[in-house]
Length: 320
Image (cartoon, rainbow, N blue to C red; front, side, top):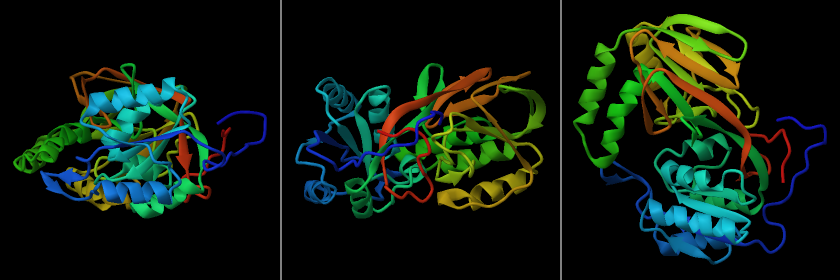
């Protein structure tokens, strides 16, 4: 982030804060099987632990979560807490963009890529402790087709695989077979990647345009990506054999990292990907259709509560 003034931090726990906790009771399930969750007693205990007040809203669906977030912004709340998974976090974050209200996260999803990128613990109790002593920082988001994304966009084989794999969340077990079949059939494709300072013509299996380090099943597709530098990490996977790429994707799942010399990395505020033949594209869990696609950064667009001493995320710009 830019700015001549030295960074100033304000404690997220200072003063009498107006806080609304939005709880998604359906978070934390894969294939219809609960993988993480809590009841109201658990949530309220975490609220007390994290000094999050007493205002808890159990949301019945996305529309209620949006309405409750909009209301909190209009009323000048300091923090809206998303108690749920990455879908809940993204939904709340979109309504907070550009506002004075900060986002905090109590992790109750299966993967929690956004929380991980912010250095928040995966364990809800540890996350509540981090919120209680945390600071509020400004972070970037990506835009695709005018809509925000927080993790990474993808073009090529990974987008085609995620398109099928996402159906597993709703209990479609046959999506596992279809995902493997897509990977088996996919071929490297010719594409042009336009960045701020160069144009790359290449033949690649996949491209990741990353706002943060993680995407999908916690895959560390861009280990050097930061949420506060105003640029994407553009990762081009072009010298892989298909079996080698599949092994690599497995090796970086769930927050793990493995160096891969076959991946080229660039940094850019804007990215445009075109191709001779349409290629599948996604941004986080949202299907973008096919190329051509464009991505731009929106710097310092979102206020978030982060740990005072985050491991994987250290705010380097202006904080509030």
